[in-house]
Image (cartoon, rainbow, N blue to C red; front, side, top):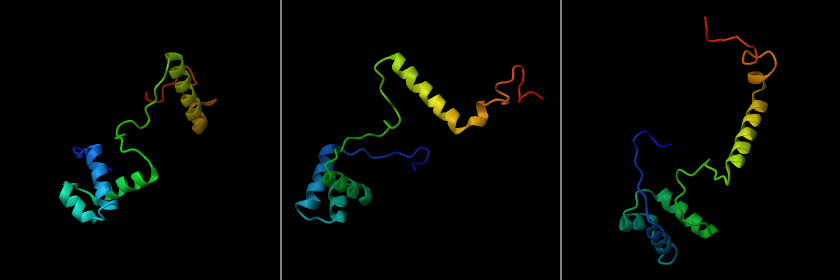
Length: 111
């Protein structure tokens, strides 16, 4: 997990492809490739090789997790309503009968 204030090196797709090529075609060791291309982590290199072998792209997807594109506001509203219903099912005691949320005039935070 990233630490607060930690920065990451962003490598170009060309550099990633060259690193993979050096390992697969020229049989260079990880340490040789790291030194030659100034890559900080051998784990990163292993990940690139694995992606290449499985046919995945080297596209940088940081920061895109969880975001969804909607074609209309109605579609987004329907999606959010479905999320709310799902959460209600996971936590029925939060909004069920007898819950303080359902009782008019009751404020559990008021003493």
